[in-house]
Length: 269
Image 1 (cartoon, rainbow, N blue to C red):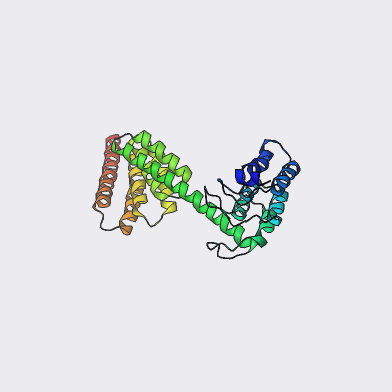
Image 2: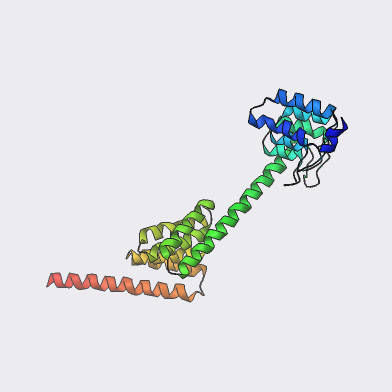
């Protein structure tokens, strides 16, 4: 009997893991009971405890038996540091959280130690982890876009910014950057769409209006461009670039008016 304990809890882990290969939980439980009675170590983390495995596979009856037999639910998974109750909470199995809760010591990072408190905490942590991954991916795509702009590969940069927008569709700077790229490759209407999106997301940021003014100028809507640059100047009166763009738009509008008047005079003659 002592030999099983000396070998480690590997047979226990195998018995629990067999459910993923089609073995029923009841058959797995029978094996677990035999091994525990034979002296298998229920608390050896090599690399994880039997309770961690049972929690991972959602084996309610096995979890109940192991707890009643004296398994320690406070030993975390060595690889990711999560305890059995956190594992089942993350999988959305409330009934398993209820089974483990009376046996589990309060976890310091969980602000409200209750069944609902654990589930809320784990969901919040999961969202934060997911958000961090998304932010890292966005930062990488944004960096690749900036590098492509430096190399004057505006079409390539536009693709990187488009991918970044899929990750975070609420980032106004991404629309501003893509608007610039659209304009550089002659897609003024797409540039205008992105500029409007930028303004909608961040109405107090002058750059969105600057991008819109540039797109309108390319579309030869000079009056609207002047109005847009005026809005940008109200937000940033010190910007030399916006002032220059405004006066360029005014000059273009005057030239267009003069050309129209000249054409009318020629027709009257």
